[in-house]
Image (tube, rainbow, N blue to C red):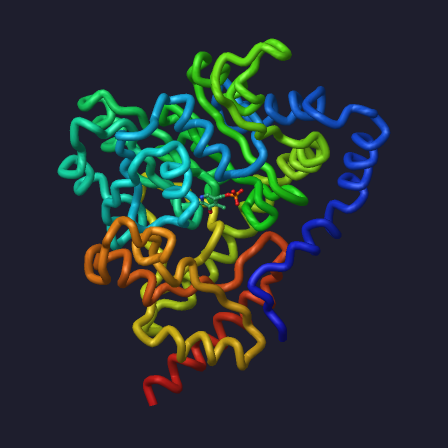
Length: 370
Ligand SMILES: *Cc1c(COP(=O)(O)O)cnc(C)c1O
């Protein structure tokens, strides 16, 4: 049985009629920037996230960038990020001219370790920017306390966490602002690029909207040097349809994760750890092993697609050679990069496919033990 890592076409197939209707409705409307489709999705998504405001933008990187600009982060400022995030989190900080300050993750959760954050705070620190990696919420309460104590803002990178809850409350308004990506493979994915910022702060929401529209609230009157980053109405219409299925599709991911976690005990893999305050949405199901390439080859030979999120940590990327950080500077992030493997998971994956993955991992473990 073939088990691709993720099959996006199946999501379209499942909702084909509703999606076709939504896209054609926008085509026929004659309204191709902003408008009611965008406003309706922003309302729906804000309410889904338990946030007061949602501002659509063009993609997840822009969501982070525009939020940082709205928080007046710029040259000379420092933003604390996890050494174990996707590079976009750092790139957004660099794009406003600020410096990303890396702090190691908790090796159990793979997310920014609040216990290590305070030592990294300096008079230049403006923002704490945790990522909810793999759909697992970061530990927000201690980060919120640190932000309050030191007068910092908290911005969350929630690109992988649509629908996740931290201590019972949806990700979307714990921090000052929350940045979202609707890249097609995310839990809530568009059919192209799209993103958003949610917040309970009305001034921040207004500022983000203005920055994303060339720094202009009134046509041809430009308050500040903004960018062009708007949520496309075709994508908004698609997202409004898919949002109605998000909880059901996240529940399907959850049942695959439960099958994996219960049936892959004792096979020599480190399985995901879920703290009692976390309700993750299983964007990825990530295991760890020191024998990763052997496992990956074995699964590949059985028709099972895997991926590595991520093989090179940001501080060792050529793009960040100016940080002058050598191998060994962030050992936890580096060890994760060398051992993590993402098994197939997705809302259209069948129980039989999950069984096939478990069987193949078990046969690898048997071959290893022999
Ligand atoms: C996908 C992703 C982004 C960037 O989103 P785009 O829409 O591709 O710009 C940022 N951060 C994380 C953690 C992501 O997974």
